[in-house]
Length: 55
Figure 1 (cartoon, rainbow, N blue to C red):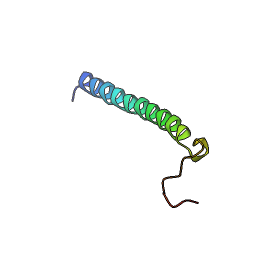
Figure 2: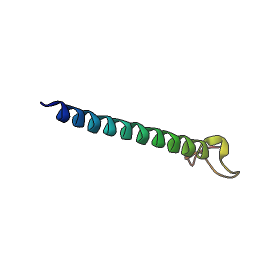
Figure 3: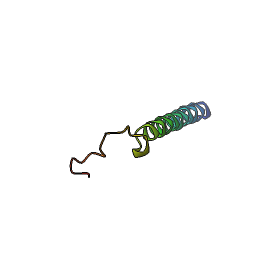
Figure 4: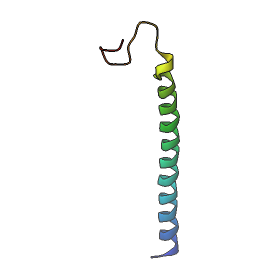
């Protein structure tokens, strides 16, 4: 392959890799926020942990 083709291919691969990394970071941050909101310590009074037989 010619040097221009190799350079173009390298730029495309680098762009896709960095986009994937940014997407992974966003998903990680969103998942962390969701997990803190739904943690058992944040349940309101009168709610159960998911089973009806809790006493």
